[in-house]
Amino acid sequence: MDARPILPSVAVGVFGPAASRSGIELAPTMSKRTKSKPQDRGYVLFDVIYEDGSRASNRRVPVSVVGGLDGDEPARRMIEEQDEAIAAKSGRLRLSIKRVTRSER
Image 1 (cartoon, rainbow, N blue to C red):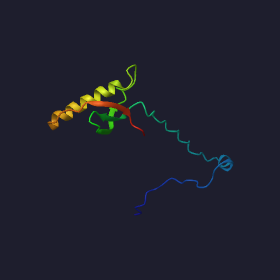
Image 2 (cartoon, rainbow, N blue to C red; image 1 turned 90 degrees about the horizontal axis):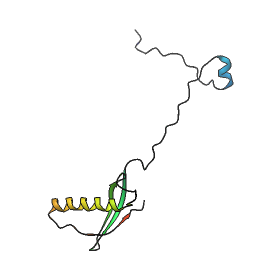
Image 3 (spheres, one colour; image 1 turned 60 degrees about the horizontal axis):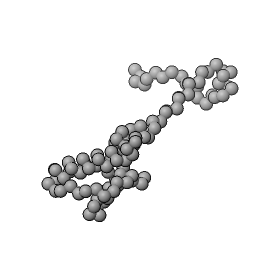
Image 4 (cartoon, one colour; image 1 turned 60 degrees about the vertical axis):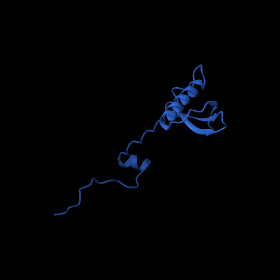
């Protein structure tokens, strides 16, 4: 007995007007994939400069927190909360933030 599967016959190389005259139906084309907007979800990256001159780059803050009438001030508060949690776990004092700016991409 033959173990090969039985495949339907397929017309190869017949396209355009010749295909329509021969009665061969072509497969429908695939639709384009819609891309999501990049700012709908994700994070905004910030650079933090501390009072002692040290710097922390690419601190992540959710997009939902940033914006609105307060601008980037909610991001500063969130980074301060992150710093407090880090300081509590490490046993060190939290550094005070001098400036917060959006990171360059």
